[in-house]
Length: 278
Image (tube, rainbow, N blue to C red; front, side):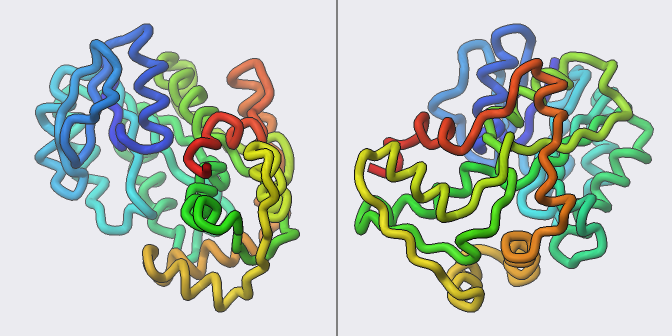
């Protein structure tokens, strides 16, 4: 049995579909039973902020896929892992972030590095996944594209190797089902650098309609992001978007190595999700 937390997110939904074909899975989320839960998947409502609520989900299971909201600073991860181990979990696969490695001292991402350390020192077998930025972050443009065929973003010509969440899910499914990946840390990126201006062009191509790109100042983007993200996360995110380090722009070979195929491009992602922008 594999327990998947964050089961209703962009990675979790895809991961459940893949795992359900070959293994027993328990899906965990804070909300109600997902309407698109794959056939055969067991569902358990639980809240990582209340570790004891995990006990029914992990009872008798072998492996935990741990996905925390934000940087996880609000969570007692040591207790989450303790409860999981008591329930029978022997191995944890943690979905972290590239920035836990590139910016481990930053206010925005230091908590994720601490969560990694908790997994490494838990006594459980562990695997850590560090993806870069998600292609699905483009959903933030959906409303303005539907209403005005406009995309507004800062740092329009700064590229990052964004990764398709389905690729993260495919990698997670691979490592969750093979204990040989224990003790390994994998950095996951897309196949090429992608700028906001290029992504707007990819979106226009998928819609077969022109999209107007509006370059934002850093302050304009910050004010917008503060409406739905904590200030330290906003500032850390803007630093990555505007002044990425060489490590944050490096194309990782590890998706190809783990899956035996190249990672998908942003254009491939938008082709599959274009209806959200119509």
